[in-house]
Length: 372
Image (tube, rainbow, N blue to C red; front, top):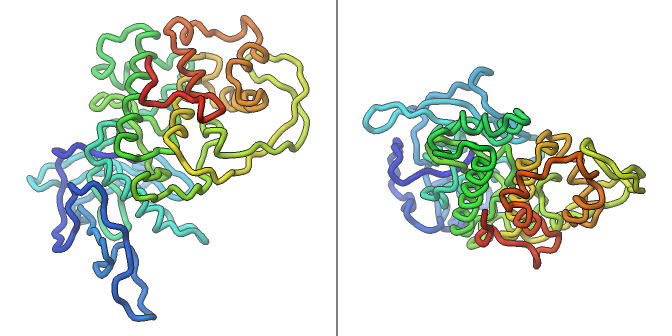
């Protein structure tokens, strides 16, 4: 999991003579100081300008790195449960991320990029509480504030809001009906993304599997591995990082590869359609990337027939085939009576979702102006 922590959360700090203050808005850029031609320095070397030492001692960290402790695995990293011994000898339940060795990929730079984003967002309420790095490019550590993601809840289908209430009863408070729960989740997720943007960070990977339903924190984001920093330029080079379901359309172009038919598992209308593949455009990230992803996430949550991953994947393909026009997709492709739009219509969320997912960034609603 990824995400930051409040300034008051407990952590065991490693002794560091020349570390930059954690209260700084940004850490200084990592630059080569003085070294001989055959000397190789990396971001964790004390001789680097802007060097920041790991905040936590590995000796204070216990990691359950077996199968029973693994809570997530991706192409470049794994997440495990663990405990962290603090300065007052108390144990804090944590989630740790360990990056994997991947041939041909500079995984160390991925670690450094995520660590940097987590430090920037340490006091941000929109993310899981970050405690620090432990060891030299070994672990990134977060307080365990819950393991249930929105993706987990969506796997319950019609029981999605029951799962949400089970995961965060106090955070949802008096929200008892599905409509009340939907709006509470929408408002909390929107506020969390806006808080991240308030720190000049673009998440770039907002989707249900990166949304935590935390009773202690509400709806927060995790996994900052793809985050871009508007202020320093880190991650702003337009490198292709997107999910084909939730990624903003300006991030990729659709290339025709074959034939097919519009319509998914939730009603079909015959229409000629080609199958496509996606190619990255290299577009510079903006905050509107996350706005589109928020809209697609809430579309999936708000329409029961879209809650399975297969259904939302097919829906995204059909939306793209309609030029990215979600209103046209609903009116022309989705067969009347097959889909239940009552939740998004009854709560007034449909208009906001449609504006968040507008294919043109210039016409798209920003996260900070979205209201539910």
